[in-house]
Length: 372
Image (cartoon, rainbow, N blue to C red; front, side, top):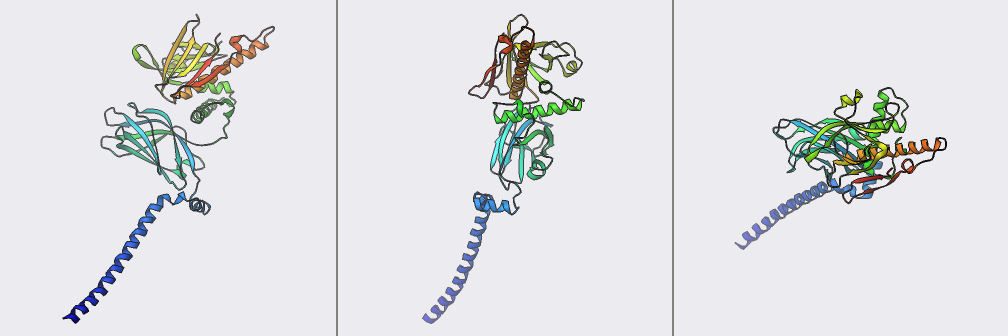
């Protein structure tokens, strides 16, 4: 009996040893696979590995920062609702503020790390539920020779029932210091600098498309300061208007005009309101509403008045900066004219320049100018 038990024990011990070894091998493989899976996303955190992947050509680009201006998002088929845009690049995620009208005009900055091949753009509701999605290839759409186009409409893939034909309009900009408009722009934040450059470049292209091959800085600014806005009336009511700038030889003075529509502006009909650019006192972004700005000025009778606008086709601070640049150019021209006139001198009105700009705790830009 004892021999039989010992025999079985020895035999059982051999079987158990084999099984233990097999289990150990399977466990080791499972642990190794798990480690590799974890390392798949994080092994580039090792500088040596990251540099090796870049040098060997496995990774086609270095880390870079991408500025995405989210203009608007549209879709059909569902009742009015608040939405937001969420952008994901690897482990980095940024979001716009929610909008009930789908108009955002908000710049977002996101870091695209080496090895990230796709950027995901999601249209979400306020509960972060994905309604539609868009996949953008980094090399094919952003870092290609042609690069991303400004104000480009992208068709999104529907991810929720009731959403039809979702689209998002984006402007994507990779940091680039070689811009011909650099001479106009000083002292503004990186976000606003990029957006203003984009708007000036767009204005220059539109001017050249109309046959003006050699545009001056003032002509570019004049073109850039035209566009749709909403103007506030009493009790917070708003209505759509079209604003533009007129100057010599069309107008004796440089004026910022408000028309009922773009058609009225192009037909050169009388403006509903006109503001002499030299009589603008301040251009101020609303510190509590990132889409609203105020122009404080004097009318022909030297009465103070204010006009409050809400942006539509571009970021609020782009309007503030461009109007500021226009006023400075007009004041510089007035000063030069005074200095060249026989026996003339630059008055405090003509010689005054911007007294400076300030930013509120909420980031709103305010430009104050000298008064007459």
